[in-house]
Image 1 (cartoon, one colour):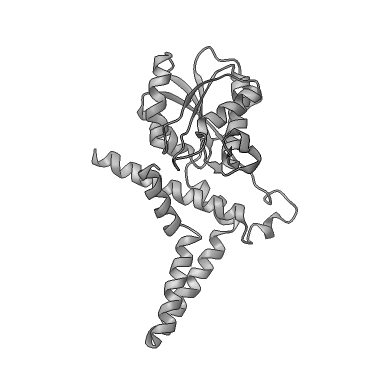
Image 2 (cartoon, rainbow, N blue to C red):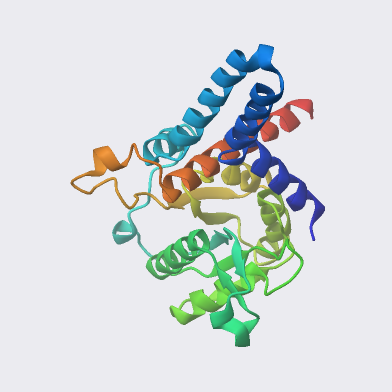
Length: 265
């Protein structure tokens, strides 16, 4: 198991919703129960934590926070023309382990975010007439590496997944480990495929490796935004709203950490 991946996962789980507000609510509830003279302030903290948990799980909150990650605009695939050189670089978005329906293929499958990215990358590769590099390892330490799973799907869609990078466990490693493969092929210009809320940080890592990056973000939209009752439903807790909030907050922390590291250097 990759230690950096494990540490970041623990930090994200304990600090970001729903873990952070729930831990705060648990601590406040315990103090209110065990320390009578602090009951009133602890009760206020408990109420704030529960409200924060509710708001963080709404699609409205998720979309608002995601808009602050400085997303690049989407590409128009129908307006693309065949490119003379370059590659489509596809970043993994996590795997599902113990996927019983794929027991004969390592019992590992792409998660929803990875599927979105892979399908979009294959369509982009078709429109631009470019090969694909898929990057993503097995940070949990078992199962089929994510890049191999993405390669299979890209190939199933009739596109050329020419390279796979299977060692990386972080976005920084995606860029660092993919760079030698692309340089060896003489490639300096890439289309970078990942979710829009992840693009700003991912782009910085690949540009730091010396590539000219054209962002190809995906993942816009949602289940309730454009429905007739979207305004009301976007203020109610939903799993998709909670996940978008988590992704956006995680990216904000990642961008802050990257800026601090670059400032120190």
